[in-house]
Image 1: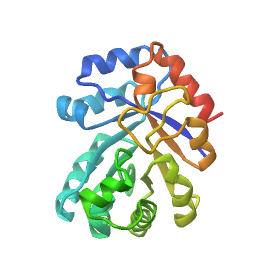
Image 2: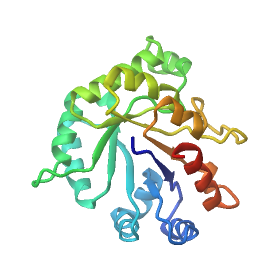
Image 3: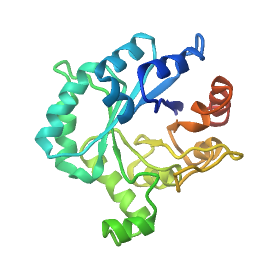
Image 4: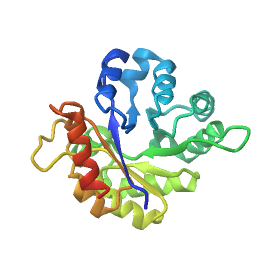
Length: 232
């Protein structure tokens, strides 16, 4: 299995992002560009970070009618990122349309993964606010199975669900897991979390790590700690 640590570059603008990445010297970690940075800086931030030699997970979580998502994915496919995502709640049809839009004329495309439930969502919130009465684990597995049926490469889920996703969808179906904290760190606003070492044991393929690295006094040391605990 090829594991990797993805750093969530959840910064407000390009200057802060480039200054952070410069602290890594010759190392070129896999990075996540999310809504805040993409909406602030636009596609150019993706192009520049790609020019610097980084792999990119473009985390925009598309969720709309199938044809709109298809057209949006066609635009994103031109940015040459490595992973894109959408919300599995958009249905199998939407995910199929997304895959079609993301696939370039030569047949190549980034990996496409689906968000099952956000790591900030608890079962209580899902039941009380979203009116979903099934257990959260059942919902996540069903969403993962829908993503697999649509032809996607994997899902975003908390590390606590990675094992059950693998069991339901096969070992080759990717589990990309945020909600990572060091054992001696703070949970922040996420409720379904675990450590890099435990995520490895459970079966995650990629872990997405934000504040434990970006807010660290020495981000490079924190990143290397994550790699050591998760990749080995």
